Image 1: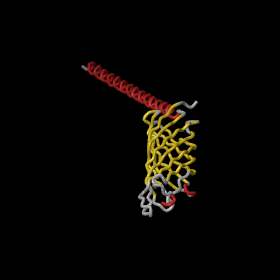
Image 2 (image 1 turned 135 degrees about the horizontal axis):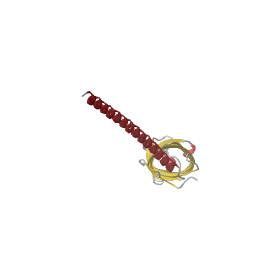
Image 3 (image 1 turned 90 degrees about the vertical axis):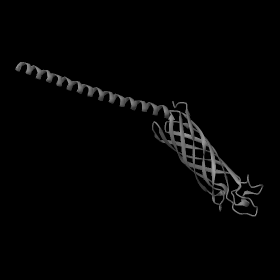
Image 4 (image 1 turned 30 degrees about the vertical axis):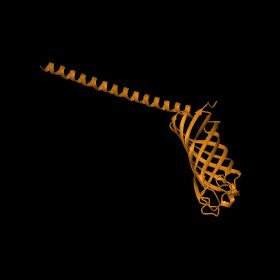
Length: 227
């Protein structure tokens, strides 16, 4: 009877030790797989980041909004805009951005002797300058830019032949313009992204500086490779 009890106890102890060892081994295996899984995930993310930001070219376009001062003594007016841009990247951070855009709105000229109510105006810009990518992750990127060039102002296109200056508008002319802003990208794929760009546009129609704020939204396509 006593011998049977010893054997039983020994068997129980052996079972407990075996179960404990199996659990320990299972835990080690699970942790090893988790570490391998995390390492694979990090490697995949790094490959995606490299693939995304090693593209040589970015092209894009879309629409936007600009708050514009159309005359020295006039209220600011709202304008809808379009834009097209291209960026050539020398490295994954530094590039040269070129952009053309158009803006359309109605100037708030108020009551005048000409009986013209809020004539339509438009401007077109052609600018270029450096672009620097300050943040680059798998899904998000941020770049900042500073550009300058020429702007064409058409401030008498809706004035029925009346000179723009007679309505308190800037003269229709070509003048220097400059802009700074930030491109905020969300990557759908390594070569395709949505972009939002808050920006400042400085224009010099009439020989003075107009400080205008706006935002662009659109889509970006990337292609080519930095060698």
